[in-house]
Length: 411
Ligand SMILES: [Zn+2]
Image (cartoon, rainbow, N blue to C red; front, side, top):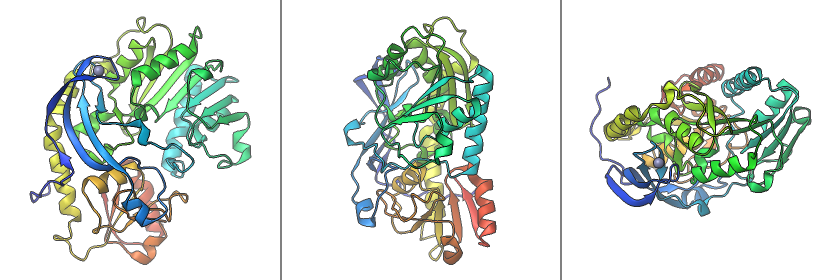
């Protein structure tokens, strides 16, 4: 293990613990949440495109204060204010330029289609983003698709990929109850919704008597984030954080029975499939019984997080390596949280992203310019910090193709 010099904690971070006895848990409606981690002055958005360094540096910030519910295992930002959010066409979240991510999404679509026989059906996707996953589900199973997302951008996908798929540029609500879907999927959206119990209750109401409708959700898993002190996975856009157990509790409490529950994508994502059959008829799965594990993870988070913060402060601190040129690879939410939590403004000037829609833009809060991989040929960085280990192979290959010799580090 690398020897780490104890550094001063960034001024925005606090591990003070206290009870908010009056606050209601938005996942189970119980009273009281236990605060265990606070980050002040963090950008309220991480996927919105910033057109200038000035706009990025002056982007609105707010406090993130994680509270834990002892009854259901849910973690939420107790200071969250949904009014600050803007989910518009300026929102650029897609990971669809990565072959690694696309391979994962296609094999997931294939698995769901085969397991549940989704052929010639109607699929509704809530929070469909740019529509790539829905288009894949439709293409592979000859299905019809309806995608709902305020951040949907028309004309992004080739017309041949969108046969039988239509989109609505809005939020999902009760007014969509008349859409008679055989499958309702919702990937990487629930973690942006604070009143999770209300949302699932509304969803259950819109499904009505259609008990055969397959429900399929995907969200990040917070267990490994806490266990590994991954502060770069905690940011304002994600106001809710689930474990398999807390997600299953929410589904059961709102009238859904769990069919399958597992981790995927190198253990980073929880996948749940369910049916609106009441919430009491399916047997409890081993994966749901994770409360003791979660209690331990919350208990150890302070020590783990101090370790990772100190580790990366040492790694990128100019005192230790005054002449080094360091870039990050991956300009999404993880990079925004990493740079803002460590308060890195001067030590790193550039962040690489393969998504051409992000290139030429700036990181909210800390102002780094987002550049294309080709930029590295001229810049010749000493170190490249990869913001998600799952992309290590893909990035190492691209760097080798660019003839850039550098040290690759992974968060
Ligand atoms: Zn709760």
